[in-house]
Structures are given as C-alpha cells and as structure tokens.
Length: 417
Image (tube, rainbow, N blue to C red):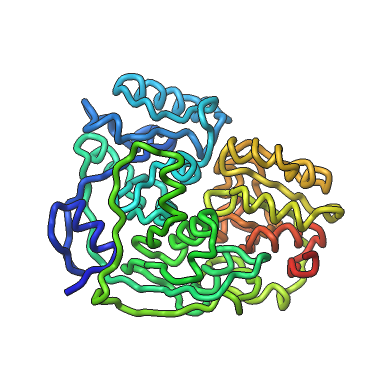
C-alpha cells in the first residue's frame, strides 16, 4: 500500500519503512525552533544538556523588543540558554529579528522531507517547504531539546489538487477561507496540496495557505517540493542535506478534492471562527472599521507589502480608521523600504511597525478596545484574540484589508485594481 507525503516523512523520522493511520510514532526532530514564549516562567524546564545545538534555533518574536520587565527577563533567559548550550542560530532583537515562522522561511530552516517542531500553533507554516511541521506543548519542547525526539499520531490525509491561476488580487488567505467555508474543520487529518495551481503560487503564498491550515485544525499541512521550493531552500541554506518526499501513486486518502483557483473571489471571515463563517467581500455588511491590520506569520511577507501598496497608492486611509502594517521580519521591512512600498503605505496614512507577533495575538502594536471593529490579514478572529473580548475581528487577505482601510468599511479590493 502506498503512502502520502506526511506518512513518508513520519516513517523516515521514525526509522520505519511505513506507517499507517492509527499508529503513534516516536520520531527524530530535524529542527527544533524555540521561541521567547518558551522562556516564560514555568513553561519549559531547561534540560541539563541539549541533544544537538546545531539542530536547535532560538528566536525572539512574540514581543520583541521587550515591553515589560517580565518579557525582558524571558529574553534574558533565552540569551543565557543559547550561550550555555552553544546554540549559534539565535535570532535576537539585533540579529535577524522576525516572526519565527517567517525566519524559518528566510533562513531555510525548514528542509524538505524532514520534521520540524515548535511550540507555536502556526508551525505548520513550514509545510510549504515539504516539511512536516507542527506545534507541540511547552513541556514537550523540553523533552525535544534534551532528546531530539517527540511523538505524533499518524492521521489520515486529505488531498487538495489546486488547478488554474489565482487572480493577482487574491491571496492564499482567500484559498483557506474557501476551504474552511466549503469543507469545515479538518481535525485529526493531514492536508496535502498538489497541482498546476501550486506551481503558479509564490513560496510566500504557499506559506500563507500552509500557516492558515492551523485554523481548520489540520495536523500537518504539506506541499510537494517542486523546483521553486528546492531553489528557495538551497539559496538560503546551501549546505543542508535533505530528501523531498512525494506521495505514492497508490496512496490512500480520506478525501481527494479539486479547487479551481481562477474562479475564487475575495472572501472575509466574520468574527468568531474561520470555519464555515466566510462570505464574499462584495456582499459584506457595511460597518465602520476602527482598525485594519496586515502582518503576522500568515501575511507579513514582501508579497503582502506589494499588494497593499498597490491598493493604497494615491489614496488616503479613511478618517477614524487606523491602518497598521507589520513585516514578518526586519529583512522584509528593509526590502519593502528599498522598493518604495513602505513610503507608499505611510503616505496613505499607515503605521509600519517593527517585526513582531504584536497585534495578531493582542500583545502590542494595535490592541483593540471594547466595541471596536477590525479587519485583519493575520491568523485568527476569535473573541479576545487582538485585545478586548468585546471587539469584533474580520479576517481577510491583505488586498481586502488595504481596500477596507481606504473606505473605512469592508471593501472588495477589485475596486482599486
């Protein structure tokens, strides 16, 4: 019996020929990503020694630079941990600052055919690179750092074949909103993406889609490793050794579905959940928006800066609406400045912040007050995610967010492009 991509990756990491849905396997972790949240008091016990300092990466991202003595202490603990255990791949505030999943992409840490673990729930972002990546608990990360191993259940896989070409105004966010709306939750299922439609997607767009698979409760989300993927990883991590994994022709799937990207339209998920809660932006209710946000591990890429700048070019942000843009990494910020995107956004009235998780998780740089309404190109829209539990959060693509910032209400970006 053939195996899916995820099954092959898990089998290799477990040192087995095959795995079957229903198995529970102990696996070797190829890359362990430790973030500032790990160093919060009592979250992760420090091992006496780490399994391999060259396979551990530490990143300060959720609140960076620190905004309180407590978080400054977390950062201090991370620096001491890195120094004590000889971990050289340490992304401090002045050394490649960025959101952890963006840095995984920037530096080629997600290797095709391997397994990556991190405590953040959007770790599945690395699946864009044919890497089985998943969030784990803080105590489990202590075990990973000490032993280099963890465990996962082997779940059934749902395969999506993407065909056609995604219209330029649309984004991977629109694809996942469509999937969540049409097919609901994918709990205890892996997700694979293949097809000609994938070939036309940038690595950034693929990463947006992979990242957002956390919002449909997928276990692992994995793309095939085409030449575009291999070139991306090689250009950033030229000495890395890896072996991409492809599904067998006779692999068994829980479901196989086809999506024609060319017929999709801009969608917006209403407050509360991504699942079965989206509708076309052109049909959206018209309410005043207090805030519009573009950023996070899902949509803080250079692609997102580019489309947002195109939408707002020559326009001004609506009165009474705050427009906040946060790059996924400082490297993206710098390149967006070189290309003029930052200037265009700021001339329209946007505030461009340093790279951090910030507003997405309600930590900083855009917290919502009670009864405020926000449209965001971040990851989540449940109550309390971005601040007050009495605020309403609408989830959409960067183009939709930028267009809505201009009008001050939910707006179809095709009106501006």
